[in-house]
Length: 267
Ligand SMILES: [Mg+2]
Image 1 (cartoon, rainbow, N blue to C red):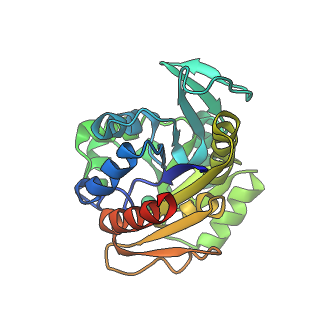
Image 2 (cartoon, helix red, strand yellow):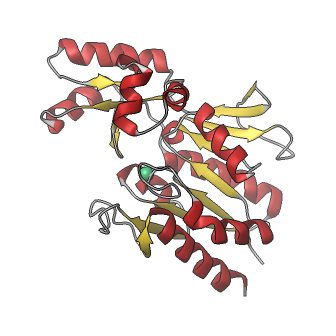
């Protein structure tokens, strides 16, 4: 049988909006553990934030931070990592993103061009906390960024995107806009799939997301799953071949879709 692996977004996918709770997905999370199926977090969150969720979820698998900016592989998890990697804090890190200092420079430049954008790096932890519902301590973890700058902007998005592209950078949209380099979740998913394939032979992949930042990840997997947004609708911008629409908002849809798929694929 093929080795199953599951990729997941966090915000508004595995985690409920505002409460950041994964409680409603616990039955499916337990099923993955029981079946020894790796759950790979692939989020716009930072390494420091994802590490906290790895502890809460008792997850010891690799994860992807900041929209595909970095792949963090626990040291010794794979026998051989044939990609350039750096050792950092117990992980082998494959860096795909543009360094944060460069992104911050670009934010400042965009402001001088007249775009009224405000990045996480322009906010205090208290401001970010009020904006996101994170506690001030969690907001500090969200501000420890390496490869991606989330920002607020209310002007002409088309013009802004043109200016970002002219700087050889990219922009994607989840709950915030995100400024980043050439990395995306899809490239990180491809590399991890390859590493699992080398270790386990044939694999079958599932991914769960809720927003356009998840499209590159969903496109790279055999079973792409879209959960409902907070208002019970599906994001109309997410349309990839074979898309499975989970019945339920965030973690509730996650739970149902994963249980169904795992039972179908392992029976
Ligand atoms: Mg999300």
